[in-house]
Image 1 (cartoon, rainbow, N blue to C red):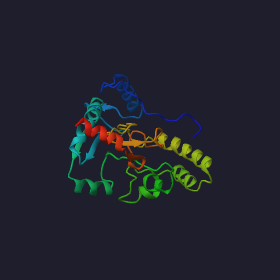
Image 2 (image 1 turned 135 degrees about the vertical axis):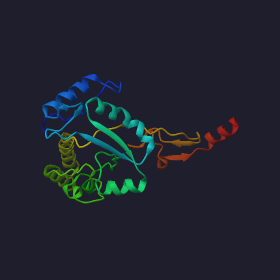
Image 3 (image 1 turned 90 degrees about the vertical axis):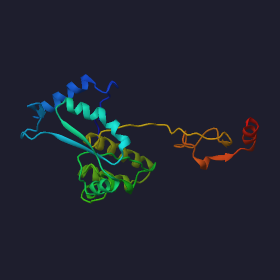
Image 4 (image 1 turned 180 degrees about the vertical axis):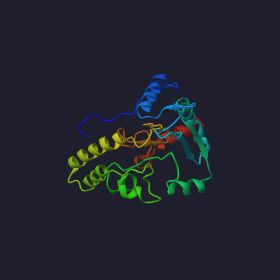
Amino acid sequence: VFGLPFVPPMSDGSGQDRALLRKAVQLLNEAGCVVKDGKRVLPNGEPITIEFLNDEPSLQPHHGPYIKNLGTLGIDATFRLVDAVQYRARVEDFDFDMTMQRFSFSATPGDSMRPFFSSQAAKTKGSYNLAGISNPAIDALIEKIIGANGRHELTVACRAFDRVFRAGRYWVPQWYRNTHPIAYWDQFGHTEKLAKYTQGVGAPENWWYDAAKAAKLEQAK
């Protein structure tokens, strides 16, 4: 909690960062996962295999570079595409090696964290805890967040949770974008300074119909 936070390594964007691949080889070898007959194996000699499970074919290209780099390391990785019903059944049963999940929470964390991160959720089929996170420290910090007395205490508890959670390295961040582009007819007005978390989203709650702008559009037609 009090040390430097874990930050995922950043690649050079080429899709095959040699420096990171060398680091991966070093870490695997140090863990006893060496290459035998061209395949990366566990210390007990069992080959390392990873299956990416998904039901959306459009996401397959996103996994391509990852699978290619794993192959370079001697790890047999595949992308398994199944129908939506089978995918849901396997995810709810935690029957997968790796899959994708989008996380979205309110601006004020609370008991909604339990289904995603608690030890109880890890034992509950159909929960959102797909990483199987079961950590007494995380459980305790979730309760601290839920029972916080005031904003300051909540902020401190959340930052402590963030440090512990990130140190666990439960997932591989895939992509992130801090803007939400939209297209719209220029016939709406909004305040000069939008409310927090709405900038770029075009939240309808902060917009209104502007008759002058609408008239200009009609003239342009």
